[in-house]
Image (cartoon, rainbow, N blue to C red; front, side, top):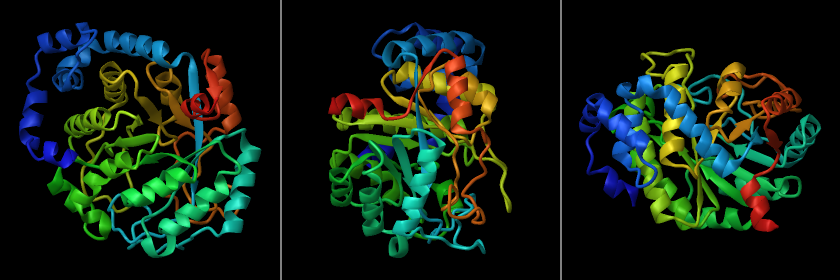
Amino acid sequence: MFSSIFSKLKWDEVEKQIATTTLQSVERALAKKENINMEDFAALISTAAAPYLEAMAKKSRELTLRRFGKTMQLYLPLYLSNDCTNSCVYCGFNQKNHIERKVLTASEIIEEIAAIKKAGPFEHILLVTGESPKNAGFEYILNAVKLCREYFSSISIEVQPLGTEEYAELAKNGVTAVYVYQETYREETYKQHHPNGKKSIFEERLRCPDRIGMAEVRKIGIGALLGLENWRVDSFFAALHLNYLQETYWNSKFSVSFPRLRPFEGQTFELCTPSDRELVQLMCAYRICFPEVEISLSTREAANFRDRAMMLGLTTMSAGSRTDPGGYAISKNELPQWEVNDARTPAEIEEKIKQNGYDPVWKDWDVSLELA
C-alpha cells in the first residue's frame, strides 16, 4: 500500500528539500535520459528550475510527440448528481450549501447523452457524481455505466471511493478509467478542508488508488487540487504516489491532472495556486519524469492557456463541459461544482486543435488499440 511509503516522509522535510534545490540539481535532472527519480522531479518543480523553463518545455514537447504524436484526446464530463454527504469547504456540492439537489434518472441520462452526441462526436465520457452512497451509490453508478456503454467506446468515472470488488464489477461492465484525487497530501490541512462526511477520512482516500489497481482497471487517474496547500509539495507527493502506482500496478495506464482551485464564495483561506508559468513548469516536470503518463487539463483553465499547453505536453482535454447535473439538456438551474473557464463549444476547440497542427481524437486511443 502507498500509505506505508507515505508515512515515512515528513511534509516539512520535503518542503525544505524542494526549497533548497540547487541549480546544479536542476541541470543534472534535465541532462538525464534515463533513471530519472523523485529527487529529479523535486528539482524540476523547484523555484531554482524557473530559469530553465524554456529548456524544460522543449524537452517536454519532444517527449510528448515521441510517445503520443500530434494528437489531442477529447472527452466530456457528464454530471449525474450533485447530492453529496461531504462538507468540502471549496466545493459547490458541499452538503451545507442550500441548493436544489439533483440525481439524474435513467431517462434523464439518456436525454443528456443525446444532447452530448449532438454537440460533438464524443466517444469518451467521464461520469461524475457527488459522494452520496444512499442516492448515487454503487448500484446507481453501475446502472449509469450500463446505459452509457451503448453510446460510448470508453467510460471513465469520478465518484466516491469504492471497494476493490466494486471497481472490478464496474470494469467488467465497461469502465475503462477511474479518477480519484487526494486533494491535498498534508493530513492536517486535509482535515480542515474536509470536516465532515466519509471524505474526511484521509487514510480512506489515500488507499483508494490501490483498490483501483488491485481491481485491474485499465487506467487510474490521480492528482492534487492546487491551491489548498503549498502546490510544489502537494505535487511532489502526487508524483510519488504516481511512481508507486506505476511500479506496483504495471498492467494499468495512468493519468494526472492539475486542477487549480479558483476563488469561491465563502472562501476563508488564502489560495496557494501556481501561476500560469508555474503550472507549465509543473506540467513539463511530469512529462520529463513520467513520459508515458496521460496529462489532462479541464475547462477549469482559460482557453488561451489550454491552447498553449497543448503544445508543451498536454494529451487530453475536456470540451464543452457543464459541471451541473442535467446541464446539457435537462436544466440550467442547478449549482455547478465549479465554474467553467473555457466556454468554447466542442467544434471551436476542435478547430483550434487543428490550427495548432494536431489531430483531435474523440475516443481513448489506448482502448481503441487494445480492441483493434
